[in-house]
Picture 1 (cartoon, rainbow, N blue to C red):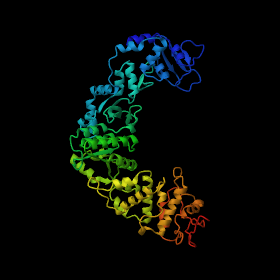
Picture 2: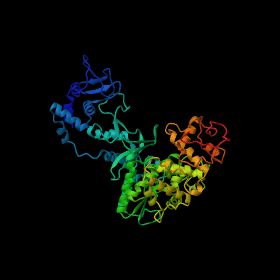
Picture 3: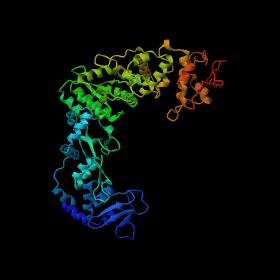
Length: 583
């Protein structure tokens, strides 16, 4: 491609800069100065160097490049587009001449994968596999290699079209490489420096969309992704799951059912690979949060499974830590709702961190690393929790084990709080339909909940959500469910809860309202409890201690409930509270 290089080298970069709209400084001839378009420049700081190697450099923002790069940046085009612009402005035929010697190009990601496969550090990969307790074949089959992004970019040489493709694919980006203080016409910084474990990430159609690099040496973040890669758009190993569904080469159901396909949804790449090594299909989210696109991808897999004569069962297998439980609880309602449309079932592999355990997190990779396939499967089956029980565990901040008994043991006040938390989590969803779809039967692996109270709770929420269109469902549950559980103490406690929710800006201040506002908050909700004031006072029942236990930590914490007379330290012992909307 020497033809276009020769012709472009004859062009005046200063003239090109003027045609591109750069504001040149008068007077100085070599190098010419211009207002830099790459930062908020007030004094000309872009130097335009003419001669045999025309190029530009800004000593303020450090942008630099050759003539082609200047056109690319100003016109927001790629290499071919820059050639087209120069050809049209200067009446040249650069594109045609350059194309004569250009062979059909392989996708740059495939080209990178082929390069890394050929230069794979096999010894380093063996050590990495041993450290992570993986068979080398498991990593190799997933296309994982150990290589250098810098070496691949260097292998492209001065092939400007290929370098443009590498930038577009996020394998490198324009800028100072830091490898040499000299100004170069082409300078790409790799998305990861040094030798790394390189993990290809494909979409459901098995087309590589990006790479994740796991550093093995050096400082900085342990995991890096190609520039511009959107983790929330893809499911890691979703392409392999689709291939298994299409091939239907083996049963994928934990219980051996011929019409089921079990899919595990995990957080991390190596969690998915661990389950895959045990013969269990899995996809990873790249974190504890699930996006709309990832939900749709799971729905697509469910539809493919149905076309193959199998019903998809999704098992959420998140890390056993606070972030994992929170992410699981956020993902469950969305997947349950989508399951109505795509006809897939959802449950949870609930792993608890035992008391006395010094670990703060347990992930699936760590849990299953030393287990044989049959033992691992049994461990998973033993930990399965129905979706409703898992939501209850998070709402109560309780372990997955024994959550049904914990719900059954709730008193009237506790059941109100529990009910309100669930209602807020489930609002704006088609919960009545979800509830109908989740009645356990022989198709589910997770056992039926043993808690009758839990079942009645969701049934009540289903009725309330079907009856009301309010965004805040919690406000439409003014009484404890079940007539036998209604009590004066519970009614007063619920009034307090509603008072707080009606007056507090929880996003800005999570403390309870101040002393001066307490009574007016009760007035606001007292009409909901027409009979509550008849026999209640602050000295009756256990509600005082219960409220004290609920108050948050902090300097603004109230030390005692406050009655309508304004007394703060001690409960009022003279007259019952008789607030009304007319006071």
